Length: 568
Image (tube, rainbow, N blue to C red; front, side, top):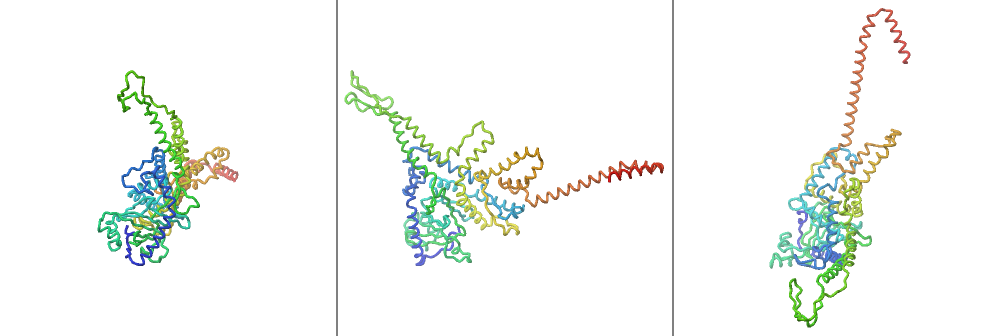
């Protein structure tokens, strides 16, 4: 984190003025987010209670499920977030690949193998980090709140570190292209940690007093990351990097430290986004299902009470026939007047519990449909063929494809670029060959969901053989329409076969030239052998001719001349 904390700036009048300006911007962002907060709080109360700290501030370990009578929405949200993790960033399979934008590099085997080695380094570093824990929390925020915020950086040892920030901490702003480029994050930290991080001379009077009274007491700080409008691109220091990193004391409105980033360190994806809402926040499937979620919880409460009345109904007791109190526990004894006909009877309330259960199940099914539960856990019949299983799986992947484009643009692309940049600064990659120094690298997504989008291309290519086969029996020249090399290259690209097991175009050309030379050499050797064999068979006849009479030799010569003339 040396990049963040270097370039500490002493508190003074200039920083006080900048601090006041930055706090004014924060006030504007808080107004923009105010309407979202109550919405998020309701979603958290009913669907993700462990994060229900937005407008309600609770202590750690407090009970948070007092409003929940039905767990359908909770389980559906967990299933959908886990499915997104498995289909977009699965830990057990590749989910991105690097490609050259220049086809000349793509055809070079050495260049492709270097790029493949860079991919291996990135996957290894991601596996060493806390990526998969943090990204799962991000998917949960996307499904529930519609907006996720992840911070990407390295620790003091150069290890990648990912942190999914709670939505209640972050205030967002977009650029002119609709991408989030500004994050104001309010967080709490102990006074002791603040003094250690920023220095006792830079923390201001308030934090210094808290540190003196109780070092473990927490203080509120503000971290701002935004584009740096005034900078000198020629200078390479932290004060002139494209993105500013500013830590502030929001109560005293003073800057504690200022640094910078070469890339935006946050990934801020939105699951869905309305075109007229430009505050930086997105909408989610949980927002669409919130009315059903609230209804099913209220209905569950009513049905539970109705069931309780059936199981433990109110009793009708004569006012003077029994000795009170009435004991309803198993084995309880109730005494009534001897000789009387008074009895304790249950009160028939006339409830219809099956109707309540039917209505409740309808609402539960609507919630499952909103979270795609039926499609994500689609059952397979034992009589299904392998082809049917593959087709159903691809349909399931394509069902979530509308969200794939936004996930790629707002999550995966900036995430992979940030990881590549951090590892490049750490010099984690092997030195690239000199002829590759000018090559530009692009990202290709190879997650299960992305492959499902391209699987139809491979199926169409393979179906072509089935269509051409009956035509080839009529006219074999139909095969001329098929470019086998182009088809092979297309399948290799779509299926993302590793470069280490596939030859480059230059290697294939060289191999074909060697094969052609060998075939030509074999043909020449075969011709030589046939000539020698023919000469060997003709030798006895020549010897017989040489030993014959001159008249016989002259007659054979005339016969051979006639055969030669006939051939001509």
